[in-house]
Length: 56
Image 1: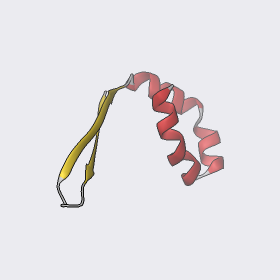
Image 2: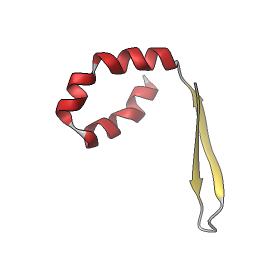
Image 3: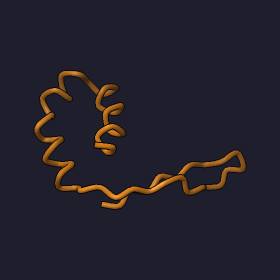
Image 4: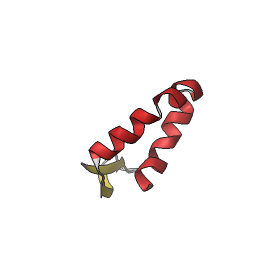
């Protein structure tokens, strides 16, 4: 899976920031094994965990 990140600059124009490629199936398998923990910790923890999952 290719993930691209974009941002809007001060002139309200979209700028390309970065891209990375990840193993989508591997991500789903890892996420499935952590579903119970994610539900227990809540939305804020889960949102903060996404960048670290992509680095692993």
